[in-house]
Length: 197
Image (cartoon, rainbow, N blue to C red; front, side, top):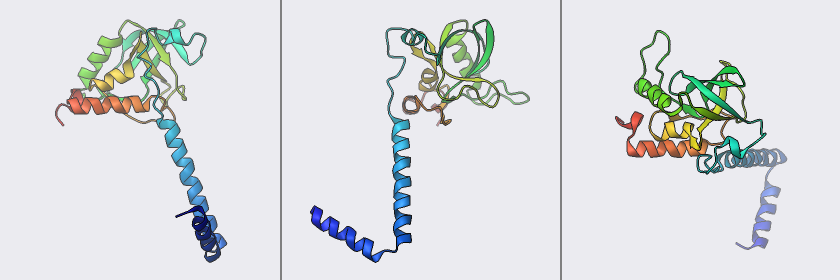
């Protein structure tokens, strides 16, 4: 179909449709385009922060989204306590969900103890770089952060090794595509949580 025939088709459709129908169709098209644009922006792959020669915080001196801290305690597979500027903060990893292992009056979930132990092995007593996305805290007043030990992106490591699942908590989606890829890799290799599925 050439441009002229496409133009003629549009004119024919406009003549036969009522203004209300045209408005309705155009509104839905506009909404669809906006949603598609939002998904494309949110899903744009971002270079994994763990693929650099410097620590992540060294790459962003003076940027308030990045902070150095010392891990004082590992709470479970996706939560730690970090000392930053002389104060302790409870930090929840963004984009991941590890099985529960310390929920009061509840037995540990499948692979919860292993997830806590692996997290402890990765970060306990170590200096970490904390990266904030959009949200600062969650409803429990825990800091929401991406966590790095040197160049190791801990959030992705936990998911890739099968100790946690990738989860989407909008608006904090900067590395969501990396976490989803890490989960796919763990599932295909039947690691950790995925071993019995």
